[in-house]
Image (cartoon, rainbow, N blue to C red; front, side):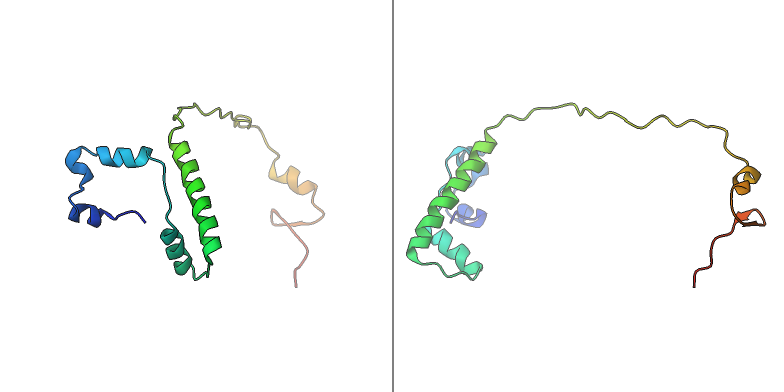
Length: 119
């Protein structure tokens, strides 16, 4: 699989030393997957693969990583959200008086609605 940052430092391949051009090159270079990478991932997932399956997944993983590389080439666009408030504006209106609201209830007591007993 790819080298870790520690491996790069040990080998003297510090991307920051040359202004990060190696990191930029790595980002633009097509990704490759080695069969050992697939075997390692399969071992971590505790999946047994035969050599034919390793070859198949090696090709498929490589294809998937190439698709991700293609996404990096898509230019970003700033888009204004087209949000529209579909709710009406709040406005204060005159409402029913307590007596008028309770006058429609089948039963009321001390200014409250009386509902059926539960349990």
